[in-house]
Length: 516
Image (tube, rainbow, N blue to C red; front, side):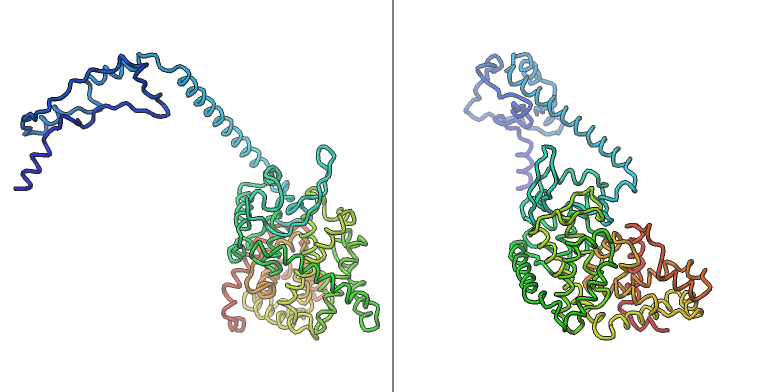
């Protein structure tokens, strides 16, 4: 019974409110309806009777449709719309709206043209024309702080040290204006610019997610954020932004306190041999034009001597000197113009405060690295001996033909792989490749040494064709100690790292698989 009553009420038409009746629409496209301006549009509406009138019972949907007004039906409402259109509307409002539409359309067209032009320019840039923007090469790039370079007016910007990453806007991440940031990314490919923005967003927060930073860094770190990324991943700087300034100042003060305490003893009888060996090794480093600058030589002597004095278990060992260079080059890049080659940088032109900052940062980051591989440099260097043996076993599993060929001509792995482990391949590949390689090493949770084993295995197998072509001991040894990598770039290192990762995935958690 109740359902029958509901059906009857549904089909009843209300006189007070008719579904679909037209109401004036006011908004961005229609000016407000002013009764004074549109008085002729007002229609005389007869008052409905107050006494209820019994409506005709609607029995079919057709009758309901015919008795219902709809917004799209043709009827007297259309006359009202035509009348509104015929009225003189507010001319100022109409013209203002029209001008805004034209202005917005013009801006949109200009923006589209600009984007198309940028895409064409990016596509026209060849790969060899991008070395100054790719993550690692021999040039030093201004990236993390203001540098002392003359501007168009001949003024010189004050040099400031990048001590922490601001957590305001990503554009100001490394202490630069938004205009500088846009200029620094115009030469990047779309992929490189996208990766750089991901780094900046991650680093701009109050607490940097180091796990996420490691994931991003594995494929290479963009130059503008490499310095701060290395400091974070090495454990030198804390993840919390607010603590970084204090940490840098404290560590800098601590390092120069060591200088005051120990460096004057370098000519003492107990330390003279150590200091003398450091002086012999530094000129052998590369790039020579940078290292042989007196101010750089002095910085390296202090760093290496202080480290040796503070680590008496190992002292100074040949090879440690090479491990300072990547840190020094990356950190000095914060203060050097993009167009300058590393060999041409006049380090003495930098302010003393900047050089002190670079020296302290390089010392502490090198110390963090060596903390994880110190057994490589203790007496008899057992860490390296163990790694070379593991390399031999690993190569025997992944490329038995190369392994047998080396043994056939009595080439011992220790004769070539010792230097690979001791210098972390720095003497085997160009410096730009070492820096790219260290981007990935920094991102490895287990540290440099663990993943380096698989990189060395992949590096050896990479030259299997050349190795198998050599048919005598002398030729093999000369090849393995002078592999032709001068032309190598990021792509070559990327392939090497991919193969190393494959080997790590297969063997890292199953060390017994090394042996047959």
